[in-house]
Amino acid sequence: MKKNSATKRIVVTLVAAVLLLSAAAGAIPLAKALYPQDYSEYVEYYEQKYSLEPSMVYAIIRTESRFNPDANSGDADARGLMQITEQTFAWIKSLIAPTESITFDELYDPEQSVRFGCFMLAYCMKLYDNDIATTAAAYHNGINLVNRLIADGKYSADGKTLNSFPYKQMNIYVRRVTSAYDIYTKLY
Image 1 (cartoon, rainbow, N blue to C red):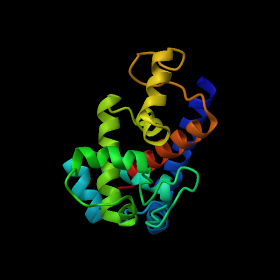
Image 2: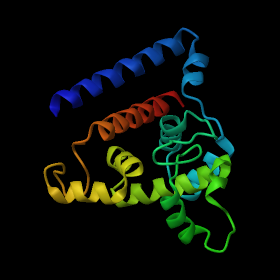
Image 3: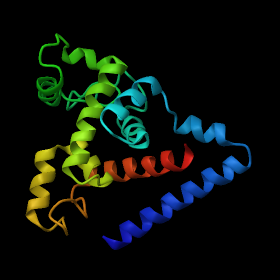
Image 4: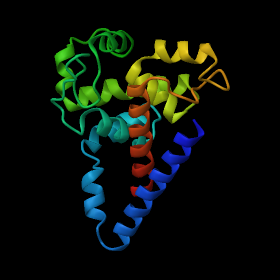
């Protein structure tokens, strides 16, 4: 576990150093092209509404869909910029839009995807003490699974957040989100 954590820190530090050197060399447009802030009008509105950091929202969008509003995950049938599944959509809709006639297909609309995704992200951030990695794991793999892993004790030192991620895809996803988050935080 410590080796992976140390490796991650080294990689993030190297990427940040490259971005900073690129910025100094006038290549900041390239870095911003790799880490865009597309759909900023929606991200800014909903990150403020749900008290989120824009860097976290952009990191999730970049990791989930690469800013493609028509993205569809296939197996999970998650849709839109923030890749919300139908089950998660129905749950969020019951909380934030119970009387609206919005449908699951409308998650291909960037505003609706950011709206629902930011609610889910804020919910996870509150649930897991603003821990970026645990929030990312819950956003991608589900709150129930993360709660089971925390309760297990093998993966949580504090009983509130995860300190290791036992599944390969979960681990990869968490690393991608935390790396993108770190880069967005340094870049903007």
